[in-house]
Length: 177
Image (cartoon, rainbow, N blue to C red; front, side):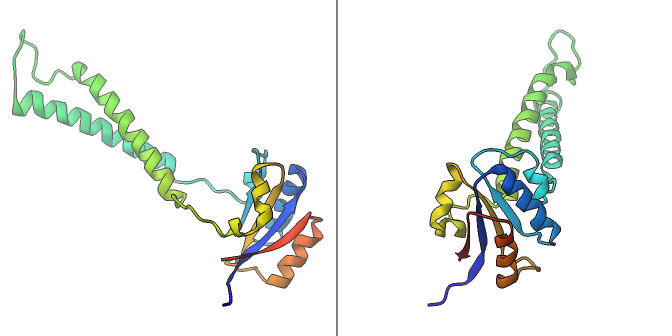
């Protein structure tokens, strides 16, 4: 049974090598690349072409929706459904609505952040083809990896392998689906 090629994976010894390799691969025109390291590497996100997401805007909208729901719920209860005139205060006494409005804004914003992050990252994703490469387990210990996916328009198994090997990696591995 023939397995489909997912991409190529290059292993590096240091974070500096990984960062330089990511910059060179990106400069060569590859866009479907990903880097894996045991700790955050300053500048690596920019080197692999990380782009901002719409998550902050979604969180803002979630917070505004929560505030509107909180205020609207209290307005409906106090003015329309069960009005009580206590001490001559107005039915729409908005200062007393602020705590619940704020709490629901925070609740909706936090829920939107969690669900939006999961959806935008394509999670949960319990399986990644990179797990098929035995040495990839070292990505959480002391090794650095750069992956180029076969779905990249520039990807050619031979040319891409030559490019990765020219970057002096510890090794280049084929990743099968």
